[in-house]
Image (cartoon, rainbow, N blue to C red; front, side, top):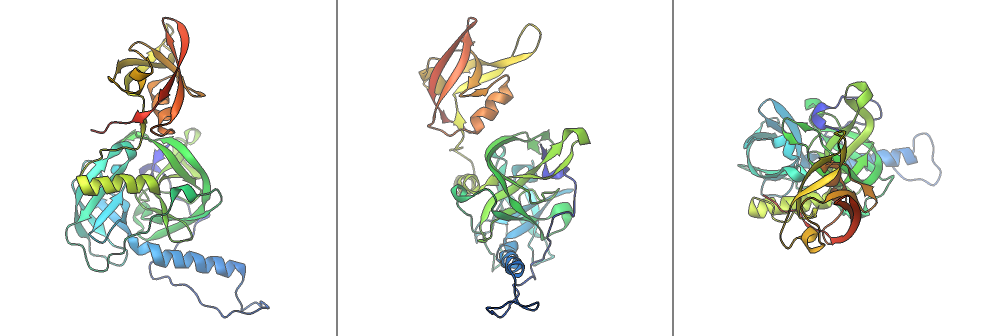
Length: 349
């Protein structure tokens, strides 16, 4: 996978609009004619209404020589975006969709493990329009989505698609500004996500933000070029959970991510092939310790998911939730064993 900063642009299958777009009006009639509304016109009207409702809540964020997008979170000037958009910066220039004058903003907090961050406008203007965040549990396959942001610096751009899948666990690449987070429960969309879209809004036709556009899939056989029609967004439930903590506390104390309570590394066999995740240390009183796991045990499976490396273990846990029970398969002294573990919550820095 590649972050929005490394995707390629495409005009295929996209719809663009600006904040000045307004819903068209049409008189109703029982018998349609060439001049009267059709289902296509109604869908266009729905698109344009969503754009008018939500696009003013989407901003462009400039950090040094890079840029991304963000979403107005509240009327106090808090803006939520991706952690890889803010990187290591603490000051930013934010441009609202209806303005050309950048506004100063400072960092509130960043949580790279979930690739989310909050920045705050130093002098919030009147009339800020916070976005409305939807219920992640109601996101369904086939729902029409609009992706809003500033791809390639084109502020106020909109692309359209559908929800292609839910519950995806995606590993981000380790590049400048991105620590390579493993994020669970992501929304997959066919709406085009290009460089600069990171931190922007993925929106349903009820004008609700259902995710933050974060990254696009890449094609290994095409030298890492963006795979058309495969993008991923962090779900609204994760956004609001992390953003609320960053705003109130300046840090995250409840990650909402599942953990075994172990420190581990990749285990290799005599042929130097990865064969599992060997436990280096166990947190006293933690989930693994309570289930009898010990340093030296090599985890080979979480539930039905094979584990052949530390990354595979992290990915498997990212798709689970704290408090859930899972069967952990491991080897000890050459013998395969299992343990029933009630997962805890990943500790935060």
